[in-house]
Length: 348
Image (cartoon, rainbow, N blue to C red; front, side, top):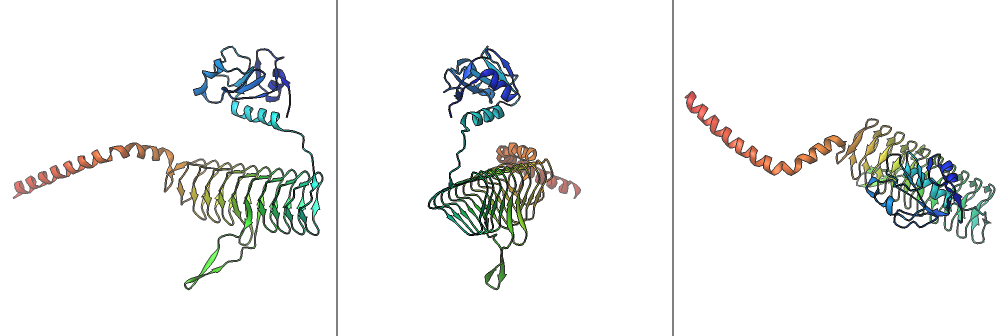
């Protein structure tokens, strides 16, 4: 989208402090390396601070502690957040609703809000309700009774199973499956009897779900994803899980059934959480950790089994010394055996 703003307008938009020429015209964004005259860039990592002096950008967004080298600048507390806001400003174009396009299937009793776009190949089952300004891309499948809120975007290949509820401003990326059957089986001698999964999934407002993520429907009640939570690609959330608000769940994490995550929990990539575990609010679990027990609010854990990260770091510092420690212990053991022999001789 072509857009031009003065540096003063951008400073006002970011609620930042301007230093330099407020009338400079800014037409876009670039990195410290690639930005050219007329663009604005940002410094979020201090190890790139020297590039502030050499960048060709007309202005830069940086923190109060960064050296500006006399450049035109907007000073903010969180440059990365400011970057995200500016990128949104310069890439968000006007939305044009296209209605239900030829090649889409719409079942009976479907209710659609205003300015909806449904692309060819989409399947919308009976009784589906779709909010205003929703965008449903090619080959999306909405089973019977699904409900979508306003401003929802479903990318191609998304499947939402029967009865599931999606909140407002939700984005679901390609190939994700919402409401597939939970993995529930009862042993029957040497075979397995399937436990019917008759619950639903409820996705709160402002949730984003990555490509090929899977969120299973509950066995009886609800699998729930809290408002504002962001889920990366290839994440598995099992049946009956309760995911709190504003959580971050990174790629390939797996959350077993009936697990509860409190508000603002962070799970790193490939974290595995066992079933029926409760993870307290604001806890952080490092990548590739295995969580088998409840986690206190605010705890920072790593490893398998997951323990406090500080303890893990202390243990890791010892690992390289283990061979020498083993030799030392062997020598001490030998010397102690000799001491004990001498003591026995003296006693006799």
